[in-house]
Length: 289
Figure 1: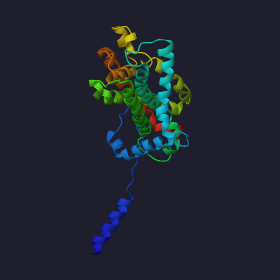
Figure 2: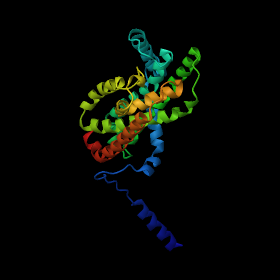
Figure 3: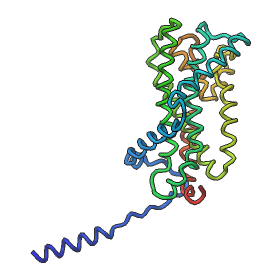
């Protein structure tokens, strides 16, 4: 009995001396999906924290998730449909603009929040280890809650204007996923760059604003000449997302195969390159941020 107890004591002592050594990655490396899965609870709590903090101490609270696209829709309807007389593919102008704003606001908020996520989360980064990519990932995923709330207004507007959903409405989750992937790809680039160059935080609002008018949010892709012009226009990944999302709800102009394929290709390129750059630079985040 004594020998067994002594052996167990030695084993417990050896176990207590076990250490986990964490070394920074070197060169270009891919994200460890298994490690990211192990930290899924952390990602969940980061998403929940972002949702709670986003409208904390605000007078209207979560109503801002609805007011942001709704007020933009009102402005676009007055200016572009009323004054500029832009075509809306036969759909009521409020419904047309609101359908384009839903995926755009999701992308816009995701890029803005993810771009600043590492800087605002500096206290967490410098104190404990976890996959750093979880922070911008949570910032992008938190926008799904706002999208769900704003989509309820979309349903109400369709009922009010008598707009029936199209048979292609089942494709909405696909365009939603594409918008999230695009936001994550751009957000990874901006968040990693923002750690070293804080100018990125000032440039991001101007970048997103210019991107808005380069996307078919206030106009239809039917205004873009067919052929190579639309394929080149598809280099903007949000062109296929916005037009496809609007088509899935309202019908009208279906995004061309060339435009959509080009948008998907650029989206995947942004995501893959963003992950690689993020992984290459993340070993210095705790020292620089």
